Length: 127
View 1: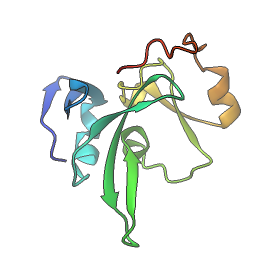
View 2: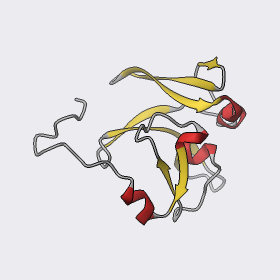
View 3: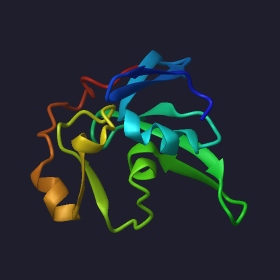
View 4: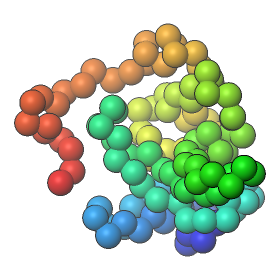
């Protein structure tokens, strides 16, 4: 992992730099720091229109030589199965602490989904 980070007891902040959105941070459990550091690239914040929030992502070349995107929450839980969803139970997609993540089915994830408050003007979406 090429990102700077700060250990804050049981929680570690990983700093994400974006020319478009500025400096942001994501939180992980300090016990997951070695797994996050296994990632050879830089983690960044990517805006998701689907949930009107940021997810932490990274791009890398997989074993077959194909450029692939990794999501930090899936990386930390070592979850490859696309049928398994990871729910940010506190609705904060930048909180990737193990206690804030839960493996769920699609139906279970929808039950915990926030109600969207944006409208046709796309209120709440960063420019």
